[in-house]
Length: 79
Image (tube, rainbow, N blue to C red):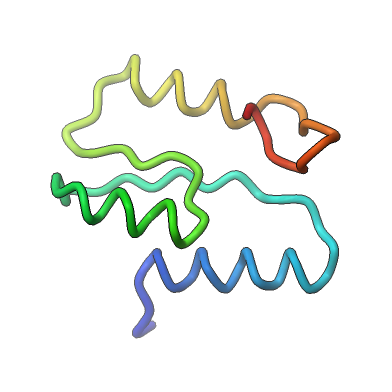
């Protein structure tokens, strides 16, 4: 409570870094169509920013891409 998705994702990324853990893929679904929201999402460590209304194709693509095995070089999924 009292935190938005950007703040929570930034905290998750900081925890992963501190603990030496691999990145957990984060896909954000938002009604905010403005570019600054997408930039803020990337800055917070969100991997995929999807604007509503979302098509099944867009959602399927994002889930398939970010559920791929981790890349051993940078710890990111589907990158």
